[in-house]
Image (cartoon, rainbow, N blue to C red; front, side, top):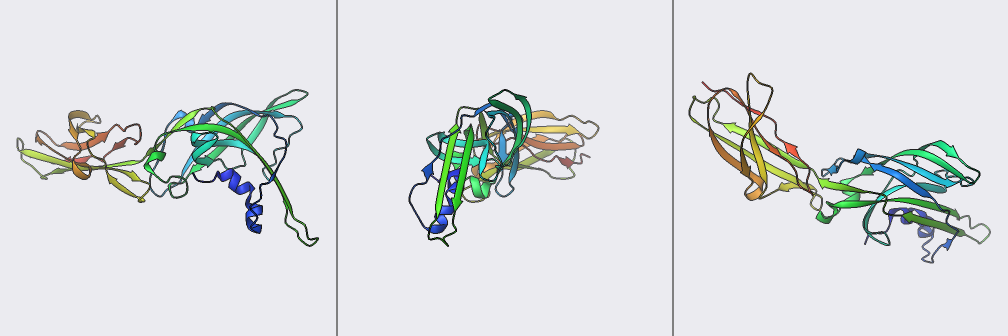
Length: 277
């Protein structure tokens, strides 16, 4: 299991000194996270290089005397895979959410907050198992340290807490799809061969690899129309290859459409024009 990113950040001061002793633990305030929405309720689709900015909104109720300054005291949303006490992977927010007070009592403050979780395939996603449904948690973290050893003394303390079961979100592998219809031009009534390829992000290799045994719809749009119609369904073969034949009837565009799976996002190929004479 990789080290919890928040915990790694909080213990950075001790890491710099090479000390392995555990930090002293302070009292944890009770926070309430509710109404958490990640990526507007949609799946997070990630390729092999580009980081994906994921919007997050939630309501936070905290003690009135707790100051979350984003410097030594933090509160926010994190995604994790596995059990809360034994995370197999985790992705944290920016640690600097924008919050607006919506209600107060003598003892509590309620805030409406928004943040961004950046999902970087090179930094956050390591294996095919990461393409699954992730859990959502709220977290609190606090860290103080003094590394000035001019008086022959250093000190550090930290506190971390997480509240799980605040929602779920899918992280999916991005897919790519191509289509090529030939020959071009073609005589009416002759055979057109439509080939293509379905690939998806492989985070371990950092590239796109073929997605086999998957259905893709072959669709056609007449030159004079703005609407595609499904012609047939074709199944990908080795390395994600697609191939099928149709009879040339009129000028228009052919494309393949992949609906996606639980682990892989949807994809639509660009239409390829065929001139029928």
